[in-house]
Image 1 (cartoon, rainbow, N blue to C red):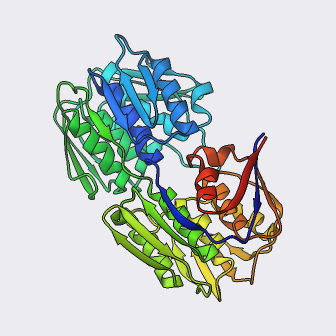
Image 2 (image 1 turned 60 degrees about the vertical axis):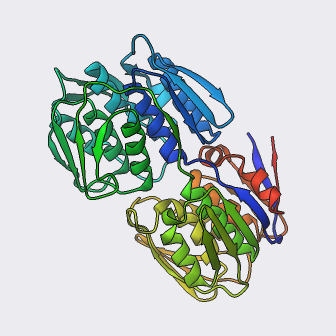
Length: 416
């Protein structure tokens, strides 16, 4: 298997362009199953998870033509309603085809999802919402089996703000008869992007990005062209990478309004950040200060940047307090950072990170996408050499991360 070899100590300098958002591209790809015409999706990141979703769409019956960061998805003459375990086990977002299939075919059989080992993450909210819309659901032999005589609009309250459940229910409701209201809906920018794409296809969705989303069902949806939003998590990761090296980096193709939480925290730590249009300029500081971070649903601090900021906090002056309120197992990376010399104490869902002068190179292992990114961040300053294995996790969420870091001056290489 491939691994990264890193020699730390170089300041990141220069500029790069941020890729399209994986967490927006995947539900948008699933939503094309609702279309009766061709869809062209642009600014799609070249990632393993995107390739997995493309394969799932092909298995269901769609044609997927791949270009450079562009997909043309051609609807099938007839859809298949089953998605087997072999396809779903590696990627949790695979479950997002459930809503479109039950809405379009009135039946679906989709394996329970896999993905990163960062918590239980049950799909009960997806299933309860679909039942509210008129689907009958049963779990049999590891599969969700759903069927309906026709979905009907309903008022659905989500017990917790779930991005995946919100997306699945929006897609299911677009072709349901009547009007659906999703209360306590997730507000992430990726939700808004999905709604904008569906509206481009002819859906009637209002208030995406707010507590209550309104969806009025329509008879059918047409094809559309759409450009995916930039990846705010990739942007945040590179901002943290610049900060930990004390470098100076310009990021292009970004949405500063999607990054307010991480911008605020980095500025509290002493990082200089300027934004203009779709460009962010980041300038590091050799005397960074400790910070308090608590992960929350959007617009709060994203859980997908918590591991990376823990790496940064490891070398800040003072003790940082990082509380994880989204996923119960998302401190797995702390043990690997400790192997590199970080001083981290875990108490329940809170990590106390006491800053140290520097980190030491070590052989470490990525356990999930963002934990892997945290180790890359640490490897930017660790000496003499860091070896990161199981980087296939990182490849699921970052498009050619080592090449972008090399452009900025980092000493990192991929070896087989």
